[in-house]
Image 1 (cartoon, rainbow, N blue to C red):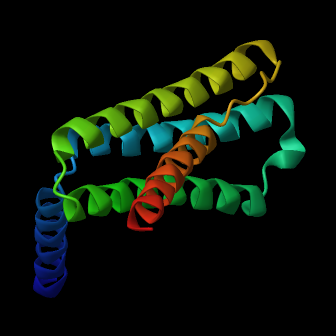
Image 2: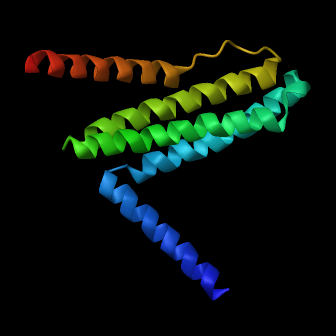
Image 3: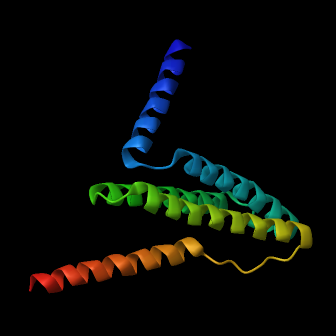
Length: 149
């Protein structure tokens, strides 16, 4: 039992060190994580109310991969910000605020479907955000290449 406790504390210590090193606001990340979990349970409840056939382990894994990629996006953005000596508080706080609002939007869609039986169209804000980030990075790289010629 002592080994499990030691491993648990080592895991917590590792997480704190990584979050501090990368400048990830821990409170916002915790809120995002909680909202993702709430969204998952609301999705199950919505499917149970509207389309019971969609409650499958395959769809649950797709959800987990989608949310996991969002978490990886946060860590990737943190690494880029750290590597370029940018202010992590400004950029990460803004990015996490957007992601928190996206999760809240998804939750409200699920709650609406639970209450009314009507599924609202999905707006995949994270994909839009990733596309915008890609456009910014692509423009920066093109400008760097043009300036070197």
